[in-house]
Length: 343
Ligand SMILES: NC(=O)N[C@@H](CC(=O)O)C(=O)O
Ligand SMILES: [Zn+2]
Ligand SMILES: [Zn+2]
Figure 1 (cartoon, protein in one colour):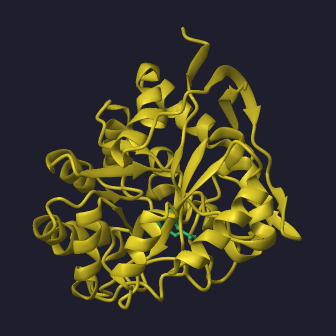
Figure 2: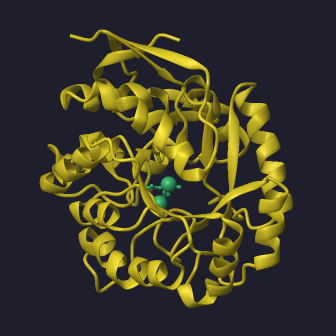
């Protein structure tokens, strides 16, 4: 039995850090584990200009300390200016741009109402080699919430792949067998990130003895067969699948509410959580690829040279942690995980 694993320091290819006091509270958790992270731009107001992204990057660097590099993204809107996108990319501020279908998730009301509105932006991104990150759910209220990701593949993603064959796209936080298959069968310019919660939870977790707001995120967790398919993709060794926590902090009172916010705060023990899954799947030898190699290769960035060691040990996840004058409930609160990041 392997009890220690030393790998290149991982990166998080999908992370929400928020701003202000929340940023100060949560950034150190990610910096403890990851060298870099793709920072989601769904602030209020969203990060749509180079100036806003550059200022936000400074605040993240201050909150996270040295040794952590935030990789910024532009929030795409119907009126996004392709020249602004290109300038931010050329100046090294933006690594990618993020497509939120308007109304699909937290702070997505300024998102894209129809992909036709951003065709010029996508054309430019394809030309300059800027990655497109996608929240892959349709917003059509006639579509059942559990089907919104699968319908997005056919209605939106397939046409975008067809129209922009050179555009590199990351389908974020995949939750279904449909997405795992779609990504696997597409060309090398399509990849996907996978969160810890979609590896651990199926939709029963939402109703386990009562309504469970801390298991609620978007895309919502799915049936067991989908969880198993997403797990298989994660541990498959395919370079198309990589780590993206989607850690999305919302204060305890905003989660435990009559209309609870979508998002799971998994940053404190993300690596330990993922590694538990790879261990259960007898795929410890595939962990480094998923956590530290596939992401940078897809984005065209250097691999991290620093190493971290994880060791088999019981780690108790606290019921909550202090943040921004209140508290956050971490993923796995109150549970014991079998791995620890030793340093
Ligand atoms: N995943 C979530 O449930 N929430 C994210 C937004 C997102 O990634 O869709 C958030 O910003 O809170
Ligand atoms: Zn999302
Ligand atoms: Zn997210």
